[in-house]
Image (cartoon, rainbow, N blue to C red; front, side):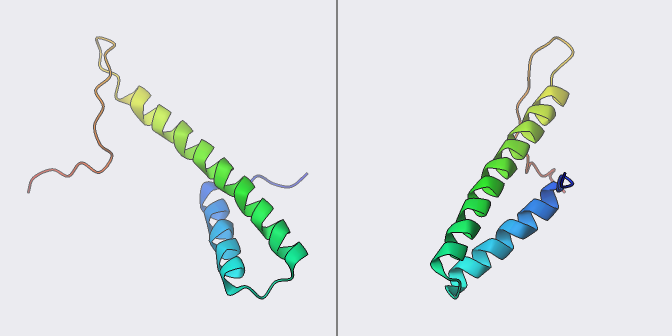
Length: 78
């Protein structure tokens, strides 16, 4: 059984697939295979990001049980 890839490895492979497809040199069968692989990777990455967001939201749950949602890119004033 193949080892599960990390998020970063999956993202790197997806970027490689996009480059190959944009190049346009691959035969139709190979292009279809690459597209299918890319679609599966994109779906998997989306799922992983959703799970990460849920974990962050859980960690931001206040002691009284309420959830305080804040943007991920909040920067403190210097």
